[in-house]
Length: 551
Image (cartoon, rainbow, N blue to C red; front, side, top):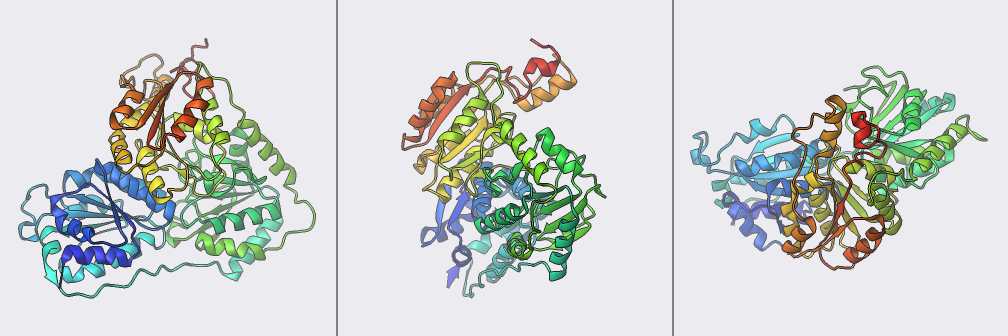
């Protein structure tokens, strides 16, 4: 006989779970007791449920397996919603377990009671309440199946407190087996014919199910056809950025040459990505619902095909199975008609990596360039949201696979929790978190988590004393009428020291490289505060230029 909490944890071990991120709650004490004797699972105690859910999401993104998060009801579940939203928009497998009041007091608005199914069902793949202890294995197996199948995403399972304490004899369910659709021979023959007739093709990559094998197969295909390949928003690590066929990142404010190439393509091969609002530049580069381009859309979820864009060729396939079929497409003899176009796009990308001068003795472009040059090829770089990320996405050359942890949802506060999850999952790799001053303060309490678990990661805080992205839009629409975007910040280096981390402030380009070496060698969490000129608002424009006042 096992109590429900032990049954739950045994089922998680059977599914291959190795890490659980949680803020402990009394509503799942029996589950915590089950974790006490778990042989395979380590429990990471976090400081706030939003950070815990973001860690679980980053773990899922990095490993391809569902990230697991435990939170209590009411405010705990509400705090975790930020991480669920990241998982939903990033197609990341994640399972959130929520401890509920005892079923005997359900629907009485008991202490912290919320209707979790109604709250979450609009943006998770499934939200379920386990109604009886003998059904725990069934529900857990279903959660793992749904989180990973089709377009992966978040699932929520609710755990009534009395269910976890009940004792029962029940068999465990088997591990989930995920179906993996493949393209048909007709699909691949159709693609080959369209590629043969194209003059201005471009491949755009992103979405779920990527792996090192997929990356290598796509790189080999691109090289054989001299085919230009671009990454969807925050999927820059899907291909080695040094590859001759890589031509850039379709993110916020893409390089003009790449934007024109996407808009002007006569064949757009969309592999895995959804071609959302950011990647399509507000649905302008590729018009919805009927694109100007001939669109070949490959996606693991058939419901995504035609959901926004009508595809001339819709292929329901996982990225892995589609990439494996690419080797069978023979290349035509001689250079393709788009060879010069691919070369010009590549040259434009490489030219964009040369830092543009910006105001101040310390320049974000130089910082990111130094990071790109100094870090190992497989270093993991995480970030949240803010104008500082525009410098990262423009100037960092992603080399190793799964080296970018960034939310396509644009969630602030993501960088530090993601870095913690990255270092836990890949302890042998260098891990760097980038954050703005506003971004860092949203989850800065998780620095305590990094210290508690002795994680030698580095946080770089870009401090310009403002919510930079909002200020940018504010100055464009209401020049000089500033309200609500200025920040009065703490001494970030001193704050880090108070947590037990290494802390240092940097005020010039010359100081950064040595500060980074010290931080990397600190053998504990380290924070570098960048004191930036607020004029340096974007890689291309100063604050005064945006406002219309040219210095």
